Image (cartoon, rainbow, N blue to C red; front, side, top):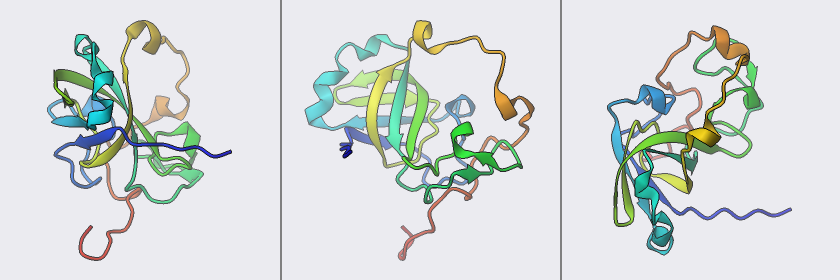
Length: 164
């Protein structure tokens, strides 16, 4: 099976490196940025301005190679990657629920941004509470999580020559 993924834009944020970046949008309250949607995809933004929140699906292009067992930021024990939100995954797809401040042509102004600057954008979906909010009784190991809310370098690729 062959899959083809085409980025539809780029995410712009003040986060230049993983270290210190909030690990979820919930902990990025004061962080604003923008989403640049490439011109050929801009017509798809029609009617988006009516939503308070949107989901950004992105490609973690600076994550380390996939590992099936990781120590997540919120724990000190090794866990299966699919039981975490760690970025080092077989398909490094990120999911972030941000607050939509404005639609300005093909650019979105957003807040509560927990994504690195220049991250490729794969898709945008509106956040709809009727679809996206579930009452749950079980949250696995997270029920006892007491870890960090900011990233360190554990999932980052080694810097390339020249500082990139």
